[in-house]
View 1 (spheres, rainbow, N blue to C red):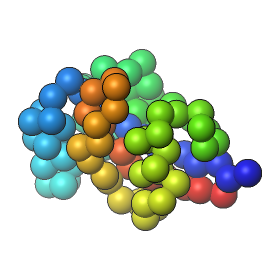
View 2 (view 1 turned 90 degrees about the vertical axis):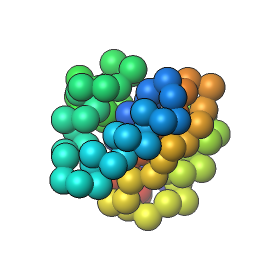
View 3 (view 1 turned 45 degrees about the vertical axis):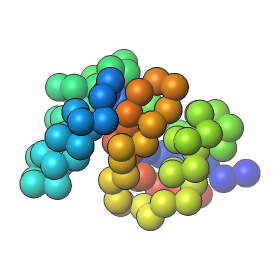
Length: 92
């Protein structure tokens, strides 16, 4: 079974998610944005919740992480926990 690593930044609104994406796209480090804005405890680790397998996260998150391009940032991705920016780090 495959595993993946991804960083994420969950926030409450789509608007805030888009604003943070703009910061990241204009050379602000993803990890720094996660530390400053993430609603998840993983934000203090730069948004990195660790390695996971399909089914360990909500389906919307899994879909992006297990089908998107490694190294890219995706979002806003809406889940029951809010809106996320997701950076895919690796898959194996």
